[in-house]
Image 1 (cartoon, rainbow, N blue to C red):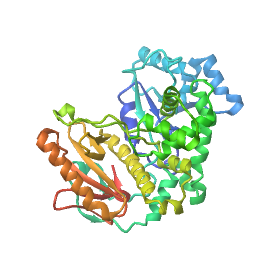
Image 2 (image 1 turned 45 degrees about the vertical axis):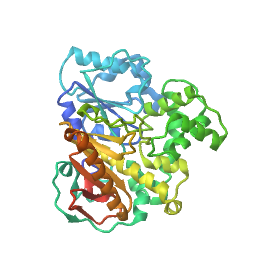
Image 3 (image 1 turned 60 degrees about the vertical axis):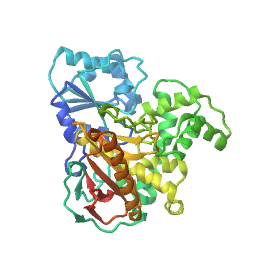
Image 4 (image 1 turned 135 degrees about the vertical axis):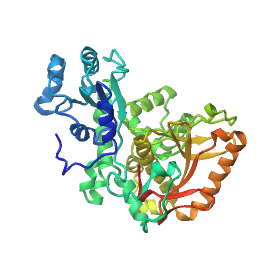
Length: 427
């Protein structure tokens, strides 16, 4: 379905194939414009685009009138933006139940319906996969000299990775991981996230469940989230910030409603807290999520960030760089079966990112933009590892990593801490 000469390979491609070989149907979920449709077409033999506006959305109308017609076609068959006609979830599930052949359908969804019109979870029949915007390795901005998986296994051959321009990192943050941005000049690509946000809020936010909402209040909440990007700010602090910056009083219920909507649209992509309690740790862990948008470029657009004003505000740049790193770490970790968390306990110990592996081991990652911060980050990691070892050796991190923006080499320090430049990383 897709010309391989024009297609940019995505890290999720092998995972999609593996899932299609295992399940009757696969659903790829993620924010609009991250490349779900184009990638899915590479794995299918026919397709129907339910979100296509052609002929006054004739595909959607056909799907509502005759679901069986939409399901018919060479398999695997792609049903793009299935949530446009939620009843198709049950139709696919029933088809897989009736004919238990692997790899029959591939669905994509850029919004999760509010359970209305979906009668069955699809558990065991329809497997879900999360797709995110492009990582720096996928977009060709990382050299890929260093494998994150190998470092998590304790393997690294030291290598010089080259000098890095701070302005380049800023431009990558502003541009984001949107496939359409790769063919545009910088000034044009920086405008895309704002256009995406407007389309998402003005169109898709209403379509998600048909409820009419105050779009101005949604923008106010989004700007507050942008001001707290990469933080563990609680809802009370968000409400206070909203009132102080805009003069608007929001109730807890209204804020919860908007946050839930943004999550269902995959607009936000918060990181859950990591707890070592399952490994018999006595440390009390905070349960706050770390706030993130699906891509740091969205926060930049909401903040009105530019290359020059970020150069003059290194604190904000640091939070946005952390978001960029954690977007990529999530994508890379997912490819080898691991998950990304953050760690924060009541003894004031924090770890920017925790990569939890299937065998129960985990890797601790500190994120620092400047090479001059590497020593401090390494000391913090070693101190936290010591605390875990005192508590229980079984729950101490297996590897320690400082992920940095400005380092020109990948190496392991004498104290055992790995130093990795983001622009040299791959899965």
